[in-house]
Image (tube, rainbow, N blue to C red; front, side, top):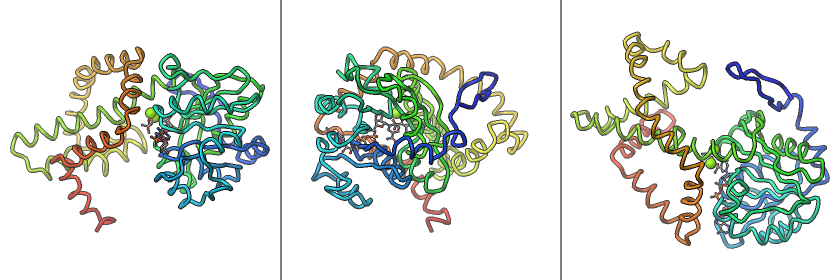
Length: 348
Ligand SMILES: NC(=O)c1ccc[n+]([C@@H]2O[C@H](COP(=O)([O-])OP(=O)(O)OC[C@H]3O[C@@H](n4cnc5c(N)ncnc54)[C@H](O)[C@@H]3O)[C@@H](O)[C@H]2O)c1
Ligand SMILES: CC(C)(O)[C@@H](O)C(=O)O
Ligand SMILES: [Mg+2]
Ligand SMILES: [Mg+2]
């Protein structure tokens, strides 16, 4: 593994140079990788593995939208696409990619098919870390590990098609065969990861739940809404408020941050903007820091996991989520955003 220096701290990272695709293919040549669930991660991971020459099958409920999607994506019923139980039986590596809540419901069936030497693969530390709540306790004679792409399954697939890789975390929880590490590394490469960063199940799930509730998804919408509302209350038009809150950030400034860091983005703005941003960022940090502390604490106590289990186990959880997404979509800010986006050349 390559040792890289991250801001003064050395960490181990698996690179594609040291573990090329050919090595992954060799490690996995006698395995049947069963991807269970074809929602968001399922398609990205299954298609990338298929294109990488891995023997991959999909397990999904028949008569579902996801089943039809798998067929449309080229998986063949009876050959590479099966009902969940059949795929569980055929697979030697079970990639458990049902939603975290659905994993609880299906666990008794999965466990039944985890015969000695098989491997159980997750893309989240959720089920194992919160096992008192999920009931997911694997038998001792199977390998248990995770590869968690740090991004959407949609991006995993898109970046693969662009010959780029999405960074993933990986962890081994249980090594029953003595081969868990090479199996998980091979899978990490095969699903289209760029680099693999080592962690453990608990660290992965705590950081992931905090991140998505925080800056990646929850906090970003919150801070957008707060600024947009203040601008609107002070008489600015929807387009002005949206451009100054979201559009400029995603189209002009975030690409600069992505390219070369925050100081680089700042340096490409006026000295007027730099003076103000350098004065104000610490106040935003200090104002939000207690909220981030509260969030992490809730994650560590298992409250966030429980909330997710409770609400996403309800029969109508999809409709309920969709209602809340619609509320966002129908808010003035995001309706203004729709019109602003329609003006981009690629949407004209
Ligand atoms: N979505 C992402 O991009 C992403 C990123 C990193 C990690 N993960 C992790 O990957 C795993 C899969 O997440 P996802 O977002 O792809 O899941 P998802 O919510 O898209 O659901 C995956 C599949 O589960 C099926 N499913 C849901 N409820 C079911 C039930 N009761 N019975 C049978 N099937 C059911 C759905 O039909 C779908 O095919 C999770 O552990 C998640 O935390 C997801
Ligand atoms: C894509 C995310 C937010 O990184 C993932 O953690 C998820 O749960 O979907
Ligand atoms: Mg997550
Ligand atoms: Mg994540």
